[in-house]
Image (cartoon, rainbow, N blue to C red; front, side, top):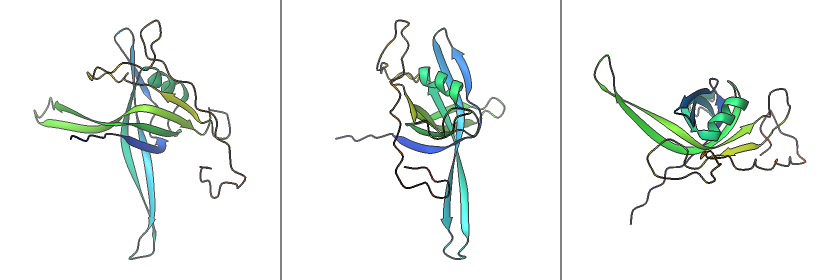
Length: 170
């Protein structure tokens, strides 16, 4: 029996505006990055410590279009997707190079649209529109043959207890 699982869940802030590129007549890809902070107390010194992890994100189709429309550097986002390893030969040195990134299948915009306060909770899902050769098809297909986003997720109800120190209410 073979067991394979490639699922990534991330929440953080975009490190740069999504860069959209048109590929062919009907395919769009967005590339951006996300920073995830980790805080802990150093057991030896008792100091609060913090480190940031920076991850490249790639999205395709309608997910990419909506990311380009609604997200910008600093936007909070919750991303579900899969890891993908890109490899290439460096043109200058001739050496093999590689980079690990996350291909986003689902993106939830946190923090609302620009100018709005609060959490929007809007979600964008795209199945199979990632430009790979896996043979998967989009969950729904529009007349133009492009994958379409699913309906936005319902807004989360905030609990009666207020958020503490800027923590999200979930």
